[in-house]
Image 1 (tube, one colour):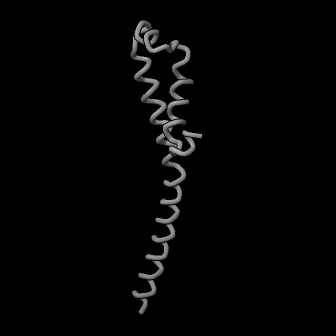
Image 2 (cartoon, rainbow, N blue to C red):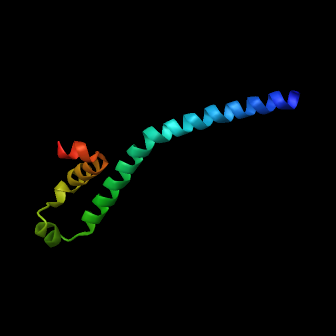
Image 3 (spheres, one colour):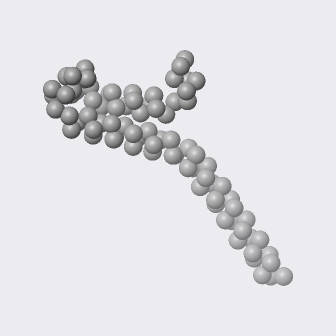
Length: 83
């Protein structure tokens, strides 16, 4: 009987802990994903020459802002993008 009660206590702790972690992932994952996308875009644009940037209509000082806008836009749902 003691084992059975102890087993229930442990599974209850794991369940609540797991739910807490899943909730944190639900909130944290989009933030990390946006950061990662911004970082990747920014690095890719930084590697381009000034001539290549000029060809696509981007000045070097605009790279960070452009990467942030792209990451924000990518994280939006299609309905929000269209609005």
